[in-house]
Length: 122
Image (cartoon, rainbow, N blue to C red; front, side, top):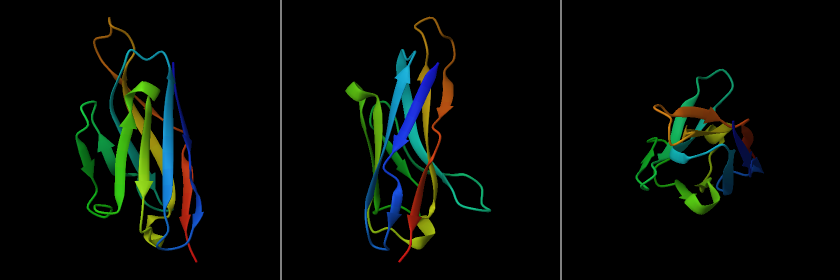
């Protein structure tokens, strides 16, 4: 199986910064696209940023220019640097990884982290 462990959430004032980390471990042959999603109270989960194995990135319009996603393939870890945080960024942030479990696997699987709370408030 695959485990994703997130860290770095917390309480920050508007305009502040946080860096989220998500480390993948377990039976991983290859990590494909990884990403960050968030879910605010009463709202659907939405994509925040994704990064492919080759390093191509995609961002939600609401975070472009403020958030940066990156990955360290040697550590099986994805990061989300969040700057200029706004109250509307308050949500539980989830890590997602698409994983190929074995060289013999014909399909890859999505795994989610447990979530980390980010609260932006004065």
